[in-house]
Image 1 (spheres, rainbow, N blue to C red):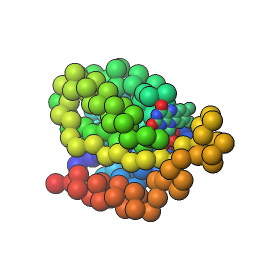
Image 2 (image 1 turned 90 degrees about the vertical axis):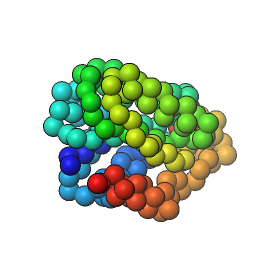
Image 3 (image 1 turned 45 degrees about the vertical axis):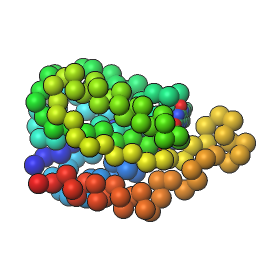
Length: 150
Ligand SMILES: Cc1cc2nc3c(=O)[nH]c(=O)nc-3n(C[C@H](O)[C@H](O)[C@H](O)COP(=O)(O)O)c2cc1C
């Protein structure tokens, strides 16, 4: 089973989660920044995970645009995300899942976790979710990856 993890990450949190999920899947897994893949590349994979941080209440623009350009296909997919506040995370995950369902993909369980957020005025208080994703999140992401295999 070949798995592709494609992500949009601005400050590295989602990238770390992508790598942890990949470590649970093993050598069948390829991890790529969204800028490194073309929509047609998904043909070579059985399962695709789409990862993003949340920016101004929305998933990363490049991952949304990538999903919109994908050919319709019957494939297993899932979403993973990191975010400053859970409410926005859930909303962003749902946004991507709805777009993926509209393409005809079968959407599986998502992975989400808080990520360190030091943006804008949050700098004044030293940011929120310090140290996240932490060791426990990384372990949870690894286990999530493991559970994806049949
Ligand atoms: C410019 C910017 C805007 C953000 N806006 C939101 C937001 O609206 N809601 C939220 O929950 N988190 C927000 N965050 C926090 C990020 O979603 C969080 O830090 C996430 O882990 C970033 O993922 P990344 O490191 O992969 O880019 C924002 C972060 C940045 C840098």
